[in-house]
Amino acid sequence: MKSWLAALAVAMTVVGCGSAPDTDVEVFTWWANGSERAGLDALVKVFEEQHPGLTFVNGAVAGGAGSTARDVLNYRMGAGDPPDTFQAHAGKELTDYILGNRVQDLKGLYDENGWSSVFPEQLLQLLTVDGKIYSVPSNMHRANVVWGNADVLTRAGLDMESRPENLDDWFVQLDRIKAAGITPLAIGKDWTQVHLLEVVLLARLGADDYTGLFTGRTDWRSPAVAGAVADFGRLMSYTNSDFQFLDWEAATQLVIDGKAAYNVMGDWAEVVFREQDWQYDVDYVAFPVPGTADEFDFLADSFTLPVGARDEGGAKAWLETVGSVEGQKAFNIAKGSIPARTGIGTDGFGTYQATAIASYMSDDIVPSLAHGAATPVRWLADITAAIRQFDTKQDVAALTAALIAAAEQNRS
Image 1: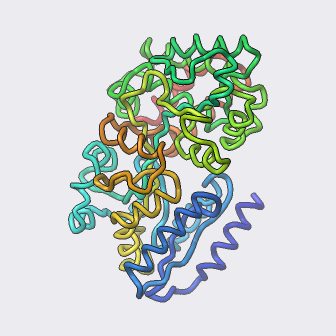
Image 2: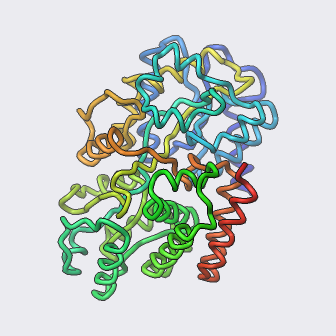
């Protein structure tokens, strides 16, 4: 609570309680450190070049992997003190703000800038609510990625070039790694396990039935879902015993330190390997979660136009930069993600990023559960609570029942 109040005090000090000058554009994010801050700085540079008459005001709130920022944002939005624009995960995470009439439709901005022809149709469908679009994606991350230590795999007698085609093949590998005395799969606390659950559901159900879990087309009571939850429980049996105390960076570091063979994480993890001078396909491997090779499980950082923004014109200028070729390229090269818009190419991007761009262009795009694209916030909170209960009891049947209850309570 103290950290939340401190962050709120800092935010209110930056913004002030009076009206901001028309040339000031407050951009609210949780990008305060590391590659996220580097990406923001690169985007700001493009914004200042494209709109020299406007002043960027950094409303970043650090802490809690974005949770602290969301608490501050919720308070400000409820108090009628919105920033000019704020960062959110594209998709269902915005549901409460949309239903509460707190964010504006940006379809006109899409039409003015021709964005409907440069963002993939599958992505646009996932962003559209009753014919309206409420955010502009700045990037694209792929969630369904396995990261592995090449040396550890070799020590376990595995060919690092070998890619298991499905979960059953992967279980064979994991058993072999475990027999070699190495932790097969590094994991962290609650949300990282929701992340693992989503990719297992995707692997077993396929793109259409996985997406149907969140639209009503797929029954959470189906045998396929029960089997996927059982697979999730089995995967958790291969993990490090201290997972409840680790966040994603520490779990990824277990792989880098050779204490674990694999980690399932979004491709923001690639920056961690790169920052430690590891070479892709030499020191580490990365491939789609077995069974999901043709799916791109997406999450995207995006920006909005709040109702009541002090400088609506300035906010729209920021959104134009976010959606521009120059903005998307500068931001994503620095952050380690890939552009949400197509046609930018791979020049300047890293080797892994180039593979992700190719997959984004050809694979089925599906929404991430753990990262706000697939469900409203309350549904995700119920699923996360169910995962925490599983950590305590290790009861697959109870987890399955809790997931069914969460769907029945939240799905409209």
